Image (tube, rainbow, N blue to C red; front, top):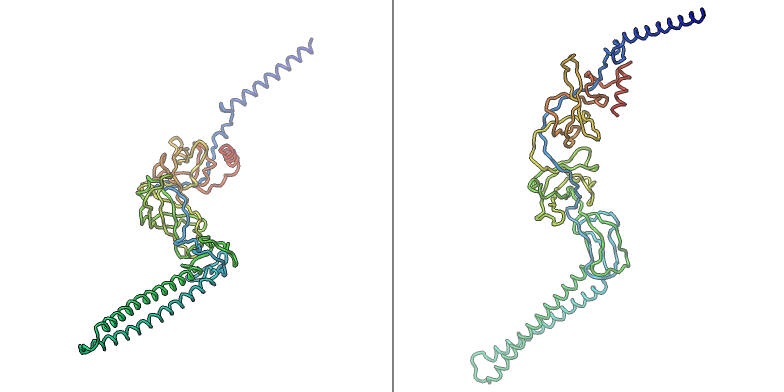
Amino acid sequence: MKRITVTALVVVLLLALAGGGVVAVRSLRDPSGVPPQQAAFEPSEAVQIVESREVTWQPTADLVGTVVAIRSVMVRNELAGVVRHVGFDSGSVLEPGQVVLRQDETLERADLEAARASVRVAEANLAQVEAQIRLAEQELERLTRGGSRAVAEVEIDRARSKLETAAADRMRWGAEVDQAKARVDQVSTRLAKLTIAAPFRARAGMRTVHEGQYLAEGADVVMLQELTDRIYLDFAIPQENAPRVVPGTAVMATGALLGPDPVRIEVVAVDAAVNNETRNLRVRAVVDNPTGVLVPGMFVQVRVPTDAPVSRVAIPSTAVRRAPYGASVFVVGKDEKDGSMRARQRFVTLGPAVGNDVIVLEGLRSGERLAAAGSFKLRDGARVAEGPPAPPPGIAANSSAGADREVH
């Protein structure tokens, strides 16, 4: 009995000591269970702080333009025949007047010689008639000279008839000469059409014809694209934006071949009618192409103004936090309670990007301070410090790492 009593007293004493220790520990903690000295420390996140600014911005539409040569032509033969010579290779540059294709000319050259011979025959007959006319004129003059009555009237009438007949023959043979010369021109024209020359300086497409090949009339020979220092850029705009784009309007074009920066191009023509199917208006601009990097058929992004310039707020793109539920920024301001700088999350409506900036349509005023580089590690109400976005050492570094994981 004595041992049991002693053991019970020892157990009660130990329980009392344990309960007192728990109460003492709890008295040293705040209701959240965090030691007072740890709860008092709040790290500051180092971020870059920028100010939103007001800019003049013009709403635009991004369209796709197509590169078009100043002049282009599909070369076709006018006459059927056999190919005797091809004067180009695939992708070669042709100078004006350079032979592109020559067809067999044997039959046309023979016809040309025959036509020229017909001209000579007709001219010879005409010369013979001219001699007969001169003789008839002389005979008539002798018969009628001096008014002599010794010559019968029938002789004079016969001489006049002979002269008139020779004059008629002269007209006929003159027409024969003209007809023969026209035949020469006709054959010469046919002969010239058997040789096709480049109409301007151009680059040839793929070669699909070869010597000895028979070409039917109107067969495709090769596509020629003119080589110039400037080239057309065609694009289509919706009909509601048509009044904004007129000849002389400047638009911006971007593309890998144009360089890293947008290129300013000028509208030179607008189509006379809107397309009935797409309700778009075709617009033609001209862009410099001295090195020939732009080839007909390429596409280029074109930015076209759709409204008058307006004043908007612009911020650096590094200040924008994007999420599936919307875009937001962290506005930096002074806390009224403790005077520290804190970041408050604010959702905004964004417009297009302009270089390294983003246009803000709603939710932000000009002159407000924002967290830019380093804002990815912030949360609403976080304490911030202006400086390079580097993680602080110790507990602050662990806190920022935890916040970073929470944001992502």
